[in-house]
Image (cartoon, rainbow, N blue to C red):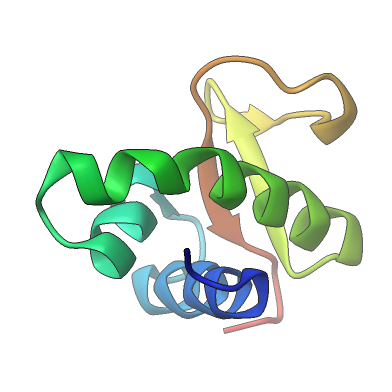
Length: 88
C-alpha cells in the first residue's frame, strides 16, 4: 500500500496542476498512483478520501460536491477536489 504522505502530496500536486477554479476526480489520483489496472487503483479510493478530508481540514484543498464546497465531516458519495485559493 502507498503511504498516506505520498497520497496527500499527490492530491495537492494534481489539484494544483489542474489550476484554480478547476477540480480533479479522486480516481485520477488513484490511477496516477496505482496505474490503469482497476485492481491496483480501486483499493486506493478510501485512503485518498481520508487524505482529502485531512487536507481540506488543513486548508490545502477544497472538497466539492455539485460544484460547491462540501462539509468533509458529512461527506458521502461522489466528490471532486480543488486546490485551495492561494495554493497554486
